[in-house]
Every structure is written in C-alpha cells, then in structure tokens.
Length: 451
Image 1: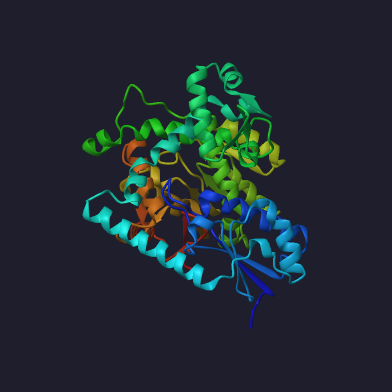
Image 2 (image 1 turned 90 degrees about the vertical axis):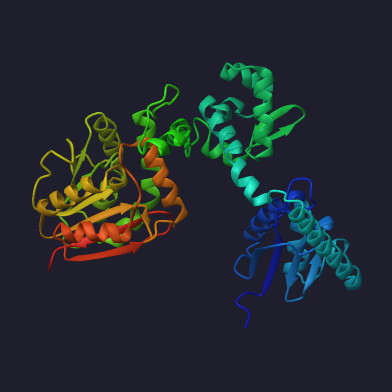
C-alpha cells in the first residue's frame, strides 16, 4: 500500500567545489520550486517529495525519479517544474525532453561515476590528503565570520532593494573594495543575489536580517557576533581553566543578549508549558526570566496564574517593556535581586530556571536548588531547562560545545549531565525527579516533593 499516489525523489547530494553534483547545478532550487508548485496546484496531499543522495548521474543533474512509474528525469531546471507537475503528476504524461530512458547508457554512466569516485578516494587516502569533512570542519569559521561581519555592519539593510558595492560601502561607511569582497562571499553563501554588478537580498535575508522586516532577527543574532570575541580566547581559557580577560574581547550589550534569549524562548515556550502543565499553578517564580517569554507563555496558558520575574536591575527595564507589549503588566511582576543570595520568597507552585544553571558552578547549583526547595509550597514543582548532557558528557554535540561557551564566558559555568542534575535535586530534598526531552538542544529536569 502506498500512502501517496506518487513519490518524487530529488537528488540534493553536495560534493566538493569543482566536482559536478546535483546541488551545484541547482537541485535545491528545483526542490523548492516543486514544493511550491504542488501547493499551488493542490497536489500536496497526493504527492510525496523526498530528497536523496547521489544517483550516479552527476554530470546530468539535477536528477529526479518519479514513482510508481520509475521515470528518471535529468537536467531539470527550476522553470521546468510547472510543466512537470501539470503534465506528469496531474495528467500522467511524462515530459519527454527531460526523461532519460536509455537503461544501458544510464548504467554505464553510473558505474563509471562510481568507479571514478572510488579511485579518487583511494588516491587521496594513499597520498595522506586531509579528508574533505575534516578540512571543512576546521575551516568552517570562515563563512560564519563573514556572516557575522555582515550583521555587525548591517549589510543586508544597506543592500535594501538592490545596490552596487560602492553604494553599500557608502551606506555602511566601509572601503568599497573590501565591501565588494564581502558581498561576493555572501552571494556564494546564498544570502545575496548578484545581477549586472548589483546585489540583492535573498528572501531569507530580506525576512530575517533587514531592518524594518517583521521577522528581523539581527538584534538577537548580534549576541552571537559578540560571542566570537569571547571564543577567540578559548586557547587561553583552556590553559587557565576559566574565562580570561583580553583587550580585544567585546561583551554583548544587555539588549542584544536579551533579544537573543527572547528569540530562543519564544520558539520553545509553548512546548515547555505543555511539558510542565499548569493544573494547580497559581504562583510562579521565573528565575533570571530575561524578556519574560516563559512567564508570558505560562500566564496565557493559565488565566488565574501570576508570575514574578527575578533578575538583575539592568535587565528589568527591558523585561518590563516585553511584558507591557504582551499586555500582561497586571499579572507579571518583576523584582531585582541575586538568586544565589537574596530571598526568593515562599509558597510558589512553580519555580522555573531556564538557561540559568549553566552559568553557575556545581556548588552554586547545589545551593540554588536547596533555596528553591525551601521557596516552593508543599506540592510545588521546580523546572530546570538547560542543555542536558548524557552521562559521559560527549553528547548532544551542541550541549558539549556550550560547555566551552561557558568556559570562555563565565568563572565556573558549564553544561551538566542528567545524573548531575538528578543528584543535586535529590540532595536538595526533591523526591520525584524526571527528565523530559524536547525538540532542539535543550531539555527539562522536573522535580517535585512527595504528593
């Protein structure tokens, strides 16, 4: 039984630059055009589209195969897709000029391509050449740094609806020659398009990286740009065992940091609310609540719930603005304080510590957890959201990398493992401790006392 009437496989295999592949010949654009056209013609419910690895006809890409007919298409262009959908998928008539049905020739080309690839791999191995994957990993900072510089200079806003390199350089007050180099790289990274010497934002750049766009994420992403400067001191931090001060390091402004945390929180808040539950929760304490995204989500999910956010005095004016924009100033209060030393309060039904524990040492977390236990009501619930490592601390990869982020940015912070969290919570007096896995890099540790 086929769950869909038809199934289209599109090769999106990438290969090193200079080597023929479907992706280098535009298969991702073909894929996107196919998905758009299926939606436009109302066929999304009956046609499944799947990306696949190399089909062996790299010189003739982009390549697609359509089932149940088993029809092979080659050299498909974005502009061919409307005809393909209308003719083949809707009317059952193949687009003959794009079909390749010479079985022996296809098999010969696939075999030759496979044998050539194996010979190249063997020759590189025998010569001791660094594998492509390892080389790309080592050099991957280059495209990242180019995009971060573009964000720092607000290049995408300067490009606007189209501009020459000279115009962009004038807008960002930079050197024209260097600006053109950067713009060309952004074209290669598919964040800009270039036509007749002028540069244009791609749809993604216009939506997420330009001033004035509803979904502009630049403020939050600027926090990542500032992290670059901290990470440049990683070698010294590993030697010292803690964050080190360097003259070139730049700290992220509080507004950029809170914007970044708000963007992350809004993506996850509803899932955290569902996993935690709101039954019986009337009073909530949000430790280091930042933009208030989680308090906002919880109060919206439970009409009778009131929350209090405890954070630094320099953060709270930003917090209060986010709360006012959400229209919840009458249900979410703010309080300046240090969660490690100032009184937390008492008889809370829920205390949330999201993206907090990684900033502290194990000893500080143990102390905080004891203080939280005392501040909760008899049936209160403590929820920790953070990057939770496995027992050997090597996975998930993002959580392991984030430990280094805390090494370069804090005195003694780190990512911690599930066994560590469970031990600290039980030592603090929580009897019921469980982990909840959520999509993405962070998870929950939820702890309660006895019912």
